[in-house]
Image 1 (tube, rainbow over the protein chains, first blue to last red):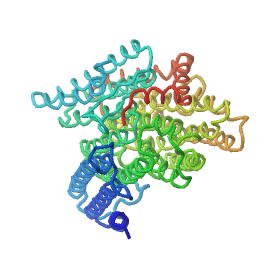
Image 2: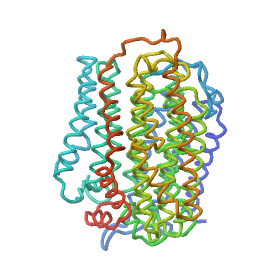
Image 3: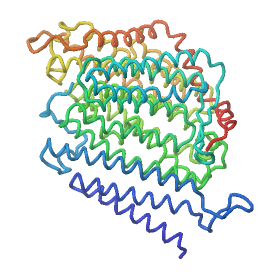
Image 4: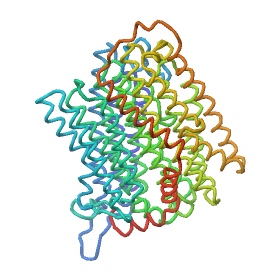
Length: 122
Length: 504
């Protein structure tokens, strides 16, 4: 089994762990942490995809042999955005806890719920 | 045109100045934000009148893969002016209000993201702008009401995170297999395997389905739209969905047509769009019918309306080999523009009524129409426009769809039935709410006056006038949208423009 394939399987496994946590998590913070694991797996996958299966690529004769940098650039950008999403999510979860006094997911998992007890928002 | 990037960032710049100066005076920020959006509208108008032909603007951050192109066509520039104008009219409702400083900055940034998405020509840049927009909306969800806003904001956050993974994964796979993310290059790239093409094509489209609030990517819609300020609900329902549908149309017709990289998966992608849009129509319309909360009703109605518009795009895609395809796309764009004017107007009215009455259910607002007859009348006219009642703007879009689909195959006839179905259901819930505004009842709950009454009336009056004028004199508007439909449909000029500029 090639190193590339091992890396691909590892990245996919990390993503699956994150996805499982996202589906099975019962706590808002845990769900966010699972989302973070999913992001890590994705970034790992992007880094692995930037390495061609058959080795490294050259961008011209006489140039040093390097791997395609674009997907690494994508991975860096994705890391930044993933971080921002998680931070925003944690801030929202903290405010949710302060106003609802719970972090349980089942309290608002229903897409068709009618929170008519909540105050009016103009 | 050398200052074009400045035109794009004008709203973000205005928002940051508003943020800075708000420390001096808490009410100054809203004036500066409105001024920057108005300046954007005027500047855009002059750019449209001076732009004779489409141009490409290359922006480079060091060359190579960090350079990207902005494809500026007269029609897309007009859409950008439309975004600035609607954002300006909506933001008038913020004037003199005590709002946290950050609101202006983040709002300016999301308008910048909306505008930029129209001009960008590669999938990764579009993805970046979607994420900037999403993070901005998450943060803005906390500004009005912590209790309801945090609930909607959290749902939006989880949805945005999942979409982030799916769309970026799809983009990475497209780049790994084809070596390009440019929409124009994808148009001429060798075709991908059917299954793989469908997988990555659907991954890209799912990001845009999320932006247009289509089922099943709409779990956040009712809570978020209800939990945030009406100003933001209106922006999301109008501008975010407008950009989402334009991108869907641009990507499916340019980068996913039968001779493109996604050629083998064309039918599967078309089927996916059909399925998602039809389910969205039914879920959105029935949920709106059952919703007593006025903002939730409008939120679900947005899901149903957008489902119908994407269904029309899917029908145009299905009829791609027939001459009727372009007119169907034109009808879809017509409905989209009418929705982008009528829905924010209705949100502003709903927000005003909630503020004035202290109630959020439409069935508890009996008699409010006697206190504010102009606003309640405008709400009903907005409903007429969305339903497609003759002499109101939406009529020409729905009439066009019915006319062109009438002689079509079974799929076209299914689309025809759904168009009629949505009009009936919308009629029931919009008129039911409109009727309750003019029912006699106890009106002591109505509190007067509401801050910015005349500014809100001005914004609503402008949008209402446009809806009525388009309904009575549709010709100039139809001509412009026909050119837009032609530009999307006959993509060769667009791809030549982008490929001449290089970029990613």
